[in-house]
Image (cartoon, rainbow, N blue to C red; front, side):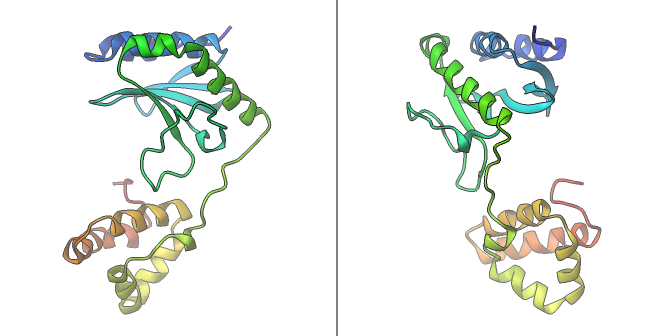
Length: 196
């Protein structure tokens, strides 16, 4: 019997736009035997403490997010990579409760495949930090300030990737430079982009 979480249930009830869709997705996931928790403010479903899927909502759709979605075979071509920089996760998106009901068996197939991947200990091959592009503005700062380079290299690979993606995103050099300047003290402090 899966473990349920009253906070996750409350999350679904509070949804103004996607309550019916989220309630049905929740029931489908719980029917697959996963335990329920509230993580990152959304219902998250685990197997032996390992994250398998979560449900979340956006303005235009609600979705199931598969933590290791890149490993799934996706026989129906339904999985969506949120952005080009997302490596592991994939979404199944929904805009109506009828869509959820029509795809219930397919949803369960994907969930069971995700469970099997977790049980097999499969890991998503992640790009190395060295494979991410270093914006020229940041490379110039690293060359100019050796202490910044040392501090940046001391960060965890995930924190380094977070900064590189954040610095590279703007189209204008001026904006990239402003982001770099704004983040330098956090880098010196050994903090990641979202560590505050």
